Amino acid sequence: MVKAIFQRKLSEKAADSFAGLADPFGVLGVSSCLQDVLSADPFADDADAVIQVIGSVDGKAVGSVRSIPLDVVVFGRRYKTAAGCEMFVSEEYRNTQYGLKLPMARLASTPNNFMVGASQSQMMIKVSEFIRSTIFYFPRRIMLFDSRAIVEQKVARPLWWLVRLAANVCLKVYWNIVGSISTLKNRGLSVCEIMADDAESLDVVAKMISADKHSCFEVHNAGWIKWHMTVSLSNQRPLRLWLVKKGDLPYAFYMTKERFYEQASHRGFKNVRLVSIVEWGCIGDLEGTAERQMRWILLGGARRFCGVADAVEILATDIGLDGFLRNKLWPCVGQGNFVFKVGKGSPLEHIKGIYDRNNWRLRPAMGDAGLS
Image 1 (cartoon, one colour):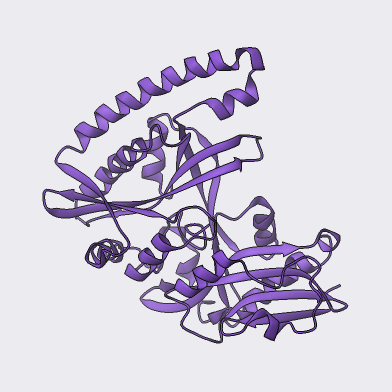
Image 2 (image 1 turned 120 degrees about the horizontal axis):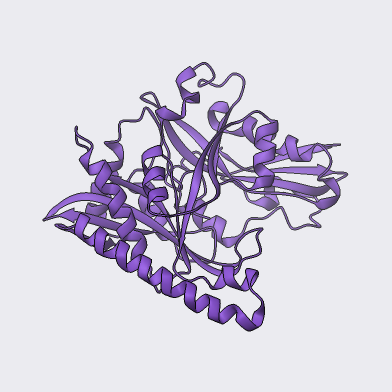
């Protein structure tokens, strides 16, 4: 049974909020990475925002859920919200109410009684489903640069190097063909990496994002872009930004995340360097030619990491992109997700259009996913 729920606000230290509470599982404090993320968060402008909820039993902290302040726009009105970034319940209490009580306590403490999340784990998705959150799923399309991680799992040791060599030759041929076609399709376009201190370019990218016609979206302004380019919840590098120009004029952009995983998935793949394309956009046009061109730009951006990563992934948040990648032989490996929960009494509670995914601008970097 849940004995007590404690809250920690943005302006408070853990020592102030949880004085006298035993911490056998080390859940009271926050990591230095999370502290950096919160300090740089452009939406963390309310000192009373709750960033941590603790569950205790008999004076002992046994569970925690932490949040990152964010903003969303829903049908022209801006709302403050938060994304859960870390949840923990000690093993002996995982079959109790804590798995549900902590998320609901977080919802109640979130501005506008509205919380969001993205790329939730299978465990958290089950919790989100149980508390009747709205969940949008999209295919996770992956293409390999190096077959090592798969071959090591599927082929006996004496032969795996030979199979890997053969598979990598096929992959090299594939990427050479894709590279040639994407170069042809993207002729007249140039790509350069943008640094976090280039305020002018960040504003240009932010304007591309704001030109999107969807009615509901997480606010990804220049402050959000710089935030994601300077800090990370992991000890690995933050996001990188790539600006695409047509002649001298900005045309499109994409952002990439590079991660090394000792354990890449439940399938047992180990020591994988994965590149994810997590945010993108282009100039608007009535005919949609720029949007179709964006798909080739993303493919060319993926190829940029040949020889650097083992694989590249794109969460296909729209049908057109998914079909494009499927036709380019990218297999679907699992699903990505965007999750939100509207609590009772929320000002968003009776906005019916919020539950239609077609009204949302969806990107893999939403919630805490771009920072993780």
